[in-house]
Image (spheres, rainbow, N blue to C red):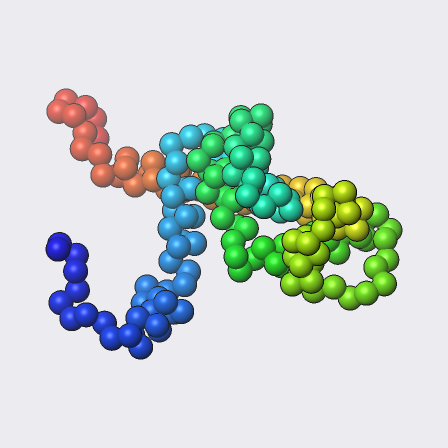
Length: 189
């Protein structure tokens, strides 16, 4: 095999590698950021796609984030790949935090004061065992309202940051390529 290790790692090494990879835990995020910056679309299209993906990641519609992101991105002339990549904001580590934040902000926006303190685990337990009609008023309505607010806010911030980053990246790349360019014979240098 071409990429096999010479020395097979022991099971403690494999366990450590599972929880703390050799290349670091930030490597996937850096890869996604570079992948988004290198897309061959306009800065607006890339930023609009990232904004659509970020907004959809805040919705409680688990399993439909990419579909929603692609639809939103298409409607606002965004880059579809950027939208799909940006939905990775909602991952198993961040979904409980996002769900609780959208639920709390939705309660605050609706003026609902819950009588009990609720954790992310309790919120998902409620979502798992109730029917949609029983789930709408106490859980989904506040989450959707909160998702609209928080998702809109983060989408706006993501749009601004991504557009600035893409413009800067493309300008640096153009300057680097221009510096490396060899002039044609007979052309002033």
